[in-house]
Each structure stands twice: as structure tokens, then as C-alpha cells.
Length: 354
Picture 1: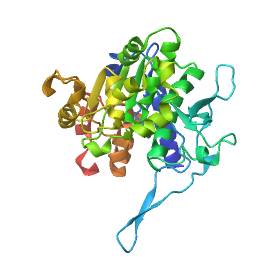
Picture 2: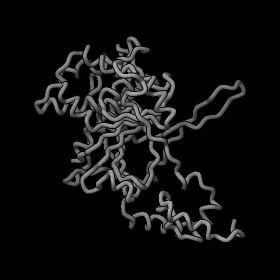
Picture 3: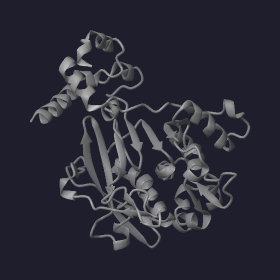
Picture 4: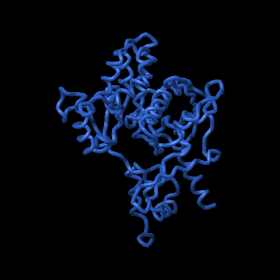
């Protein structure tokens, strides 16, 4: 009961608190909305936004090592009835179901809604009776399967995610692509803009103007690259809706080190106007790795910037420290992590408490 009351107290304090002042300088929660597309999430309470991901019925694997030193992956099905989710309703209270076309069939996707404080997470689920057994498994595993499975997952996330927000009448002012996995979202937004009268170049520029891309991986092997034959298999019937040729489509994913391949990072960079690595050093590495997108600009001057990853204090802080702060400051301290003045009071704690 003590642990339960501590959690409830911390949550009530958080929900009563306003968006932090330093965040409000850049973000007006009444008018601004960030849609954050990613395959996996860790939430921080300071940033209200909507998140879009996949509903992983099995999630990420646990591993064991056998007697030969080989890694064995074990996928454990989620106890679905215990998940804190509910069907996402549209403005009329109906469950939201959308479709994404794959070769020879249309895959139905159900949208689920989870809420983590002020953050709303929309999860896309293909495990539906209307789909084939193969298609039901698209959203089962995080980073599972071969390239064929991966491109299907990324079409569900990028294309399906954009369609889900449209069906929910959610209108982001900023679209954030975390890694290249969701970059097909750019094509879906361009398709919608082209259907409303813009040519492709204008549609791409308009979509890119409010799109942010974060890259995490400092080695080429960590970036998704699909063979042109695979891309053609899934998209040759869709480029007409963009008003471009298949060759132009493939150019958007081209990169010097992957001839004959479609680089999702390259697509994300060409379909966004704000780009960052996750540390100062990584930003410099990324500016060199992805400098091919701006061949006329020196690496040190191209638009690849950086925002250093933060630390999630409640996760890394030892339980003994959390308990001490609860006794000394009440649960309020969790909402003051960026308040330098607030933490001056740590000097007032008697030495014998440490």
C-alpha cells in the first residue's frame, strides 16, 4: 500500500502540474501538436504529444546462449487482456480501422489508444480476423523477421500511421520521424497533398517543412536499406498517385554506399527540414555519413545538428535516493528535475541521511 500510494501521489502531482516553463517557450500546448513516429518508446513527462507505433503482440525477444555460444531468441506472447489500451474512437465514437495496400491485398489495421499521463499513444494492430495469417503477424514482433517483414512493418507504421491520424482527426503541427523506420509517412503525406492539387515537388516541400528527423545509428549497417526489386514490388503501383515516375521515387532513397538499394535514412533526410543526431559527437559523425544529401555544403556546415540524449532520472536513480527524496521533498521533486533553484535544497538534508 505504501508503494501504491507513492505512485498515485506522484501521478496526481504530475497531472496537476503545467507544462514546464522552458518547454512553453517553444511549445504552445493549445495550438501545437507533435506526432512522434517510432517502433519503440520511452516517455518523458515533460513533453505532451501523440505517439504512433505498432502494437507488438510479442514485443522484443529475450535471449539465451546455447552450449555452442549461439544466441537463441525467445518471443513471449503478451497477456493482451492486461494491456492498458482501448480501441481508439473517432469523433463519432466508432472504432478506427484503416487499410494499407500490399501487393495483391489490402491489410486492415485497428488503432488502439494508450495514455501515459498527458501523452497519447496510438498503436497499430494487424492481428485481425479479416487479414491472412501472414498479415496478422506483421505487427507481432519488434525488429523481427526478414526484409520482407520489415518493409511491411514500415509501411504499416509510416503509411498506416499517417492515415490513422487523419481518421482520428488529429492534425499535427510537427511530424517527427525517429530513425528511418517511419519514413514512408512522407510519401503518404505527399500522396494526400497531391490528391488535393499540389504537384509532387510542392507537396514534398510542404510536408518536409514541418518534419523533424532524428537519427541514432553511427554505423552504416544500422540503417534500413531495401533492394530496388523489393521496393518496386511494393510501390510500383503506388507512384502514380504521387505524380512521379518510379525512377524519381527510387532517387529519394539513393545513397552512394548502397547502389541498387533504397536507404530509409536518405528518404527521411530528403523529406524533412530539421535533422539531428543524439549527441554532439554523433551529430558530427552523422553530418559526414549523410553529407551526400548536401554535396555542395561542407560537412561542418550542413544542416545535420544534434540534441544530446537525456537521462530518465526515475529509471536510473537508485531506490534509496528516490525514497530519501520522497521523505524530504514529497513526490513533487519528480516534477522539478530541470529546476536548478529547486535542487539547492539538497544541501539542507542532514548528513546522517546519506
